[in-house]
Image 1 (cartoon, rainbow, N blue to C red):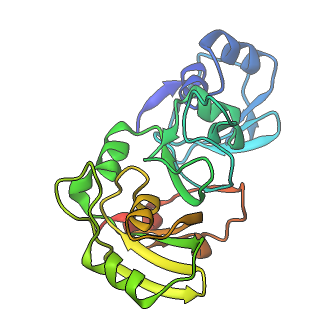
Image 2 (image 1 turned 180 degrees about the vertical axis):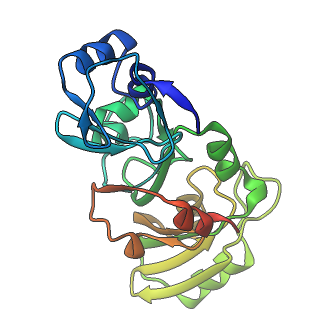
Length: 237
């Protein structure tokens, strides 16, 4: 952490342009650690700094790490084309900070989505070399059979892949429900694997990444939360 002027701090936290941040401060709309500060040139140590802007409290964060319970019909894109983007579910200043999804879920897929403005973190989490397991619940159009489970565990060949792809784990949870664990993260992988095995995915939900689960986060559909160090540590394979 370091000492920065208050206008720079606000700008770094996504509250707008430097000019706009200076106006907020001069208008008395910003408090620092509980005290109103109207001098935008005042400097503060960013360690453990708490800002209050328009009566809403924000802790200074050098980078943002966020978990979102993604609903259906939202696109994992900063420039969505057919459905609202997931950034519309987050505070406006996250857009100013160029927060983006870590990987993607299809617009009709629900569940755990990581988001961040930390480029190296996004790259590391998206890299297939990390082998981070991800847990999905797939609802199938046709009934699940033992043969289907065996195929997914043994591996199925997709037309654009050099070798068969297989699930780390595949367990039947209902007549039309599978719990599938993957680590590759290929494009539309669960849906394509089910199709290659002779079935069809009618809905898909991601409940876990590494050791981080939606259940433990306590999020409802459309809700988000900051991830702290102990939660980020659960993402390490």
